[in-house]
Length: 145
Image 1: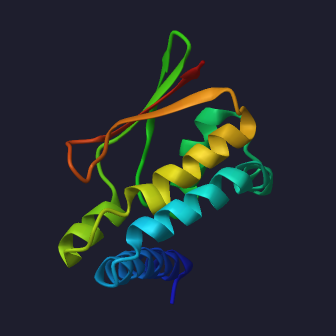
Image 2: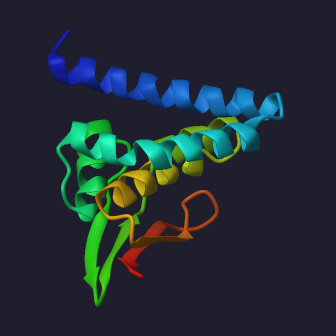
């Protein structure tokens, strides 16, 4: 099997495992609690994760994770005191909707990215203004306080 095909299969398997966990957390009515608990850990581990990924700029959290996981593609636009990251498609969100599960956005995407951004600079605001779960795009504003 060619490496490219193998990688595509692994990416899809990874997304499927995440969606399956969301589905089961919801089914057993623990999704909110697990998301809350994981968020605390994700905020604590953000600095270590950016170091492991070699990320030094907040914008690169979105760019590098897109390249590694190939789940979505973020567009970065600089603003007056930060940047806006937008995504118009997400494999994780699409799979979750097809399965009829709850939203995977916070637990597996946005909270980990916020932890990483704040791991670079704890003084940054991380504001989610829209997600693909309920809107037409995922939009995150990162700015100075």
